[in-house]
Amino acid sequence: MAGSFSITGLASGLPSDIVDQLVNAQKTRLKSMEKDKSFFTSQQTAIGELETKMLALETKAKELQETSAWAPHTVSSSDSDRVVASADSTAQAANHSIVVGQLATYDTKAMDAASGFASATTTLGIGTTFSFEYNGVTYGSNAVPSTTNFDTATLENMTLEDLASAINGIDYGDDDGVSASVLYDGSKYRLILTAKDSGTYTDSFGNRGDRISNIASGYSFTQTVAPQDAILKIDGIDVVSSTNQVTTALTGVTLNLQDVTAGTTVADSDGDGWADSIGTTGSAVNVSIQNDTSALKTVLNSFLDAYNGVVDYVNTHKSDTLSGDSLSRSVLSQLRTVLNTQTQTSLGTLTPYSTLAEMGLRTDQKTGKISFNSTSLDNALAVDFNSVTRMFTSQHASTTDTFNEGLAHRMADLIDSLTASTSGSVTGRKDGLKARVDRLEKSIEQENARLEKVRETLTKKFSNLEQMISKMNSQGSSLTSSISKLSGN
Image (cartoon, rainbow, N blue to C red; front, side, top):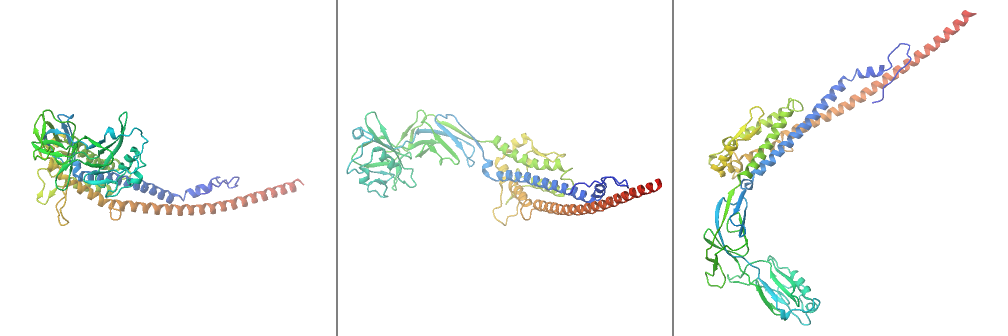
């Protein structure tokens, strides 16, 4: 809008800001529109922030839909120098007796000193071939599958380091492969082959043997580390593992074997030349797996904090930006309904816990915020941990099921429907407020344009008036001067 127009020296004595006063007198409608815009803009922001709080709650609810969130465990070992254990969400709380009789080792073959090279730059020589078997498959010169850089012409120009690099570069498919390196023993350079996977190799007939075998070359090799499987006894049952990380014996539990337990020996029960059982049972290691209720309560309380975040935001702004807003009140009402609805299964209402109130949830009657009675929650987790889990995670088995799903699913579904991009009531409210603000901005723009025209009209009128009065004053002064002269004559 243009600057104020000032009129000075008018014979009528009108104020210099007469145009501003007259324009301002017509700004009532503009001020009303600007006030409305400010209110609806702040409400638009408030609904957006409320949606953010709701989506944070939805995220926490979705986390609690996963069974992994309900099965944190603490794991302890009575002798971590021998057995270290960990557990995932599928493990069950229990105590296990572990006896370790033998650790798994890696099959290793080393070039004999007599075949060693005196210089690192010495090449393999004319006519050299080199091949070996790994897990029953032949690799190297004329091998199937064929490998690069293993033809005779290439081999004869290779040093031991070159050969080691070629072996390491072989594609071993799904197997771990062979690691090749060169060892200098102080006088000779010697090629070392080590299987990357521990334990013995079992062929298609069930026979066990070395992973690396049948090394064919002009050089002699000796086995420096014989492969062996880990042998242990879990709760009195013999277990054979090709690795020292036992992951399949106990569901959800990983046992990392560090050392054999005192007084334990192994035996070959089937007489095939390989140990497969515990011969003498020595001192056992106790591995204890317990439900980590402390970690679980942290997860539950983060869900409560997110819920209270929505409640607290509405309470804080119900007298200003959310004043008179029915949507925010409706959101709280629907959240409370979901929170207090009983969880069901296909067999009916879940027992012994179907609502959070039954396991110690309390609602502040003044604020509507929720919290757990710690003693009641601890008791519920101790009495029936699985029931508490199902209260959150229970789901429909088919699209025809109509029972009330777990709280985590109901809460996430509600918020998802409220904030849906096309049909959500929160989205609709945001869109409605935006449209209203847009209309007000357009109306304000039009009103400012109208007032500017009013200002231009008034400015022109009062400019003309000033010119007319100035001219009349000038004429009057001239007439007065002429009369004075006549009188003087």
